[in-house]
Image (cartoon, rainbow, N blue to C red; front, side, top):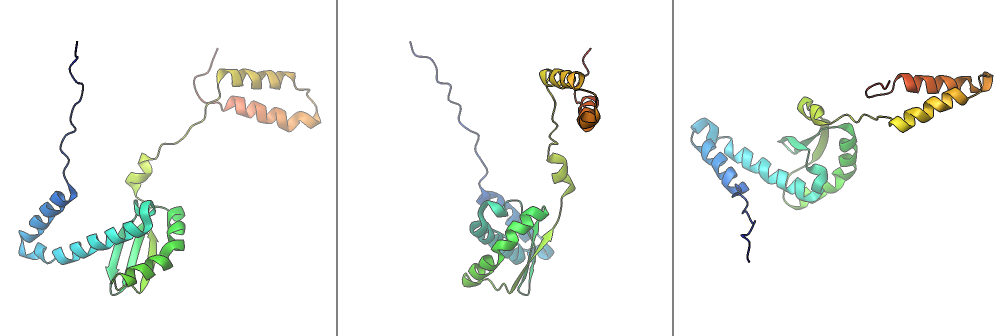
Length: 167
């Protein structure tokens, strides 16, 4: 006996071209906004070029400014900015070879408060067996000058342990 298929088609996705077209239509709807369209199109094209050249390294970065041959890229943290800095000479050469008039590339670190909140803080927790082992170690260690620092460290570890206290 045949069972009905469990296949459920995915909902239709909005293609980037469709969303970009909507933005272009919006910008063209007003004379003042229409003046922004060439700049937006140029920055979108430059972003695509940078993304092709830098790959996933550029995913969380943005083009901060592009004017008179000065390209300023923003990175969300110093570590990523350092990695990007190593690739800037190659990026500049390739962009110039592809027709972009880039004479200087600078990096700017811009930490986003919203991004910081999304990063979960990892908290370690000692298992019950680990607590028992450290308690037993603290009880069995000989109380002398050589073990003073170790005893203090074990006592501090047990006093600062995370999670609910056991009875």
